[in-house]
Image (cartoon, helix red, strand yellow):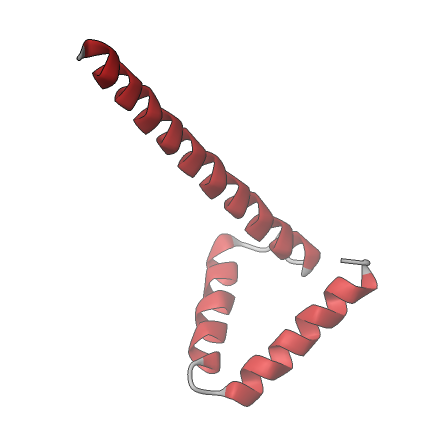
Length: 81
Protein backbone atom coordinates (compact mmCIF):
# COMPACT_ATOMS: atom_id res chain seq x y z
CA UNK A 1 0.00 0.00 0.00
CA UNK A 2 2.77 2.44 0.93
CA UNK A 3 4.62 1.63 -2.27
CA UNK A 4 1.53 2.44 -4.31
CA UNK A 5 1.05 5.75 -2.50
CA UNK A 6 4.72 6.63 -2.99
CA UNK A 7 4.49 5.73 -6.68
CA UNK A 8 1.41 7.94 -7.09
CA UNK A 9 3.17 10.81 -5.32
CA UNK A 10 6.20 10.49 -7.62
CA UNK A 11 3.88 10.47 -10.63
CA UNK A 12 2.08 13.59 -9.38
CA UNK A 13 5.38 15.42 -8.82
CA UNK A 14 6.61 14.39 -12.25
CA UNK A 15 3.45 15.72 -13.89
CA UNK A 16 3.76 19.00 -11.96
CA UNK A 17 7.39 19.33 -13.05
CA UNK A 18 6.47 18.65 -16.67
CA UNK A 19 3.72 21.28 -16.51
CA UNK A 20 6.15 23.86 -15.06
CA UNK A 21 8.71 23.09 -17.77
CA UNK A 22 6.07 23.48 -20.48
CA UNK A 23 4.92 26.79 -18.99
CA UNK A 24 8.50 28.06 -18.76
CA UNK A 25 9.23 27.09 -22.37
CA UNK A 26 6.10 28.89 -23.56
CA UNK A 27 7.08 32.07 -21.70
CA UNK A 28 10.57 31.96 -23.20
CA UNK A 29 9.09 31.60 -26.69
CA UNK A 30 6.72 34.53 -26.10
CA UNK A 31 9.64 36.66 -24.91
CA UNK A 32 11.46 35.72 -28.10
CA UNK A 33 8.57 37.12 -30.12
CA UNK A 34 8.92 40.46 -28.31
CA UNK A 35 12.62 40.53 -29.20
CA UNK A 36 11.92 39.47 -32.80
CA UNK A 37 9.46 42.35 -33.15
CA UNK A 38 12.23 44.78 -32.14
CA UNK A 39 10.55 45.66 -28.84
CA UNK A 40 13.06 44.15 -26.43
CA UNK A 41 13.90 47.44 -24.71
CA UNK A 42 10.41 48.93 -24.51
CA UNK A 43 8.70 49.38 -21.17
CA UNK A 44 6.51 46.53 -20.02
CA UNK A 45 3.47 48.83 -19.72
CA UNK A 46 3.84 49.75 -23.41
CA UNK A 47 4.15 46.11 -24.43
CA UNK A 48 1.07 45.15 -22.45
CA UNK A 49 -0.83 48.10 -23.92
CA UNK A 50 0.12 47.03 -27.44
CA UNK A 51 -1.05 43.49 -26.80
CA UNK A 52 -4.33 44.58 -25.21
CA UNK A 53 -5.00 46.96 -28.10
CA UNK A 54 -4.25 44.27 -30.67
CA UNK A 55 -6.44 41.78 -28.82
CA UNK A 56 -9.36 44.20 -28.92
CA UNK A 57 -8.79 45.07 -32.59
CA UNK A 58 -8.80 41.47 -33.81
CA UNK A 59 -11.96 40.43 -31.95
CA UNK A 60 -14.56 39.96 -34.64
CA UNK A 61 -12.36 41.53 -37.31
CA UNK A 62 -11.17 38.75 -39.57
CA UNK A 63 -9.54 41.21 -41.98
CA UNK A 64 -7.37 42.71 -39.23
CA UNK A 65 -6.49 39.25 -37.94
CA UNK A 66 -5.47 38.20 -41.47
CA UNK A 67 -3.44 41.39 -41.98
CA UNK A 68 -1.50 40.92 -38.76
CA UNK A 69 -1.01 37.20 -39.43
CA UNK A 70 0.48 38.04 -42.84
CA UNK A 71 2.89 40.53 -41.25
CA UNK A 72 3.99 37.91 -38.72
CA UNK A 73 4.34 35.17 -41.32
CA UNK A 74 6.49 37.44 -43.46
CA UNK A 75 8.72 38.25 -40.48
CA UNK A 76 9.17 34.56 -39.73
CA UNK A 77 9.90 33.87 -43.40
CA UNK A 78 12.70 36.43 -43.51
CA UNK A 79 14.52 34.54 -40.77
CA UNK A 80 13.90 31.11 -42.22
CA UNK A 81 11.42 30.08 -39.52
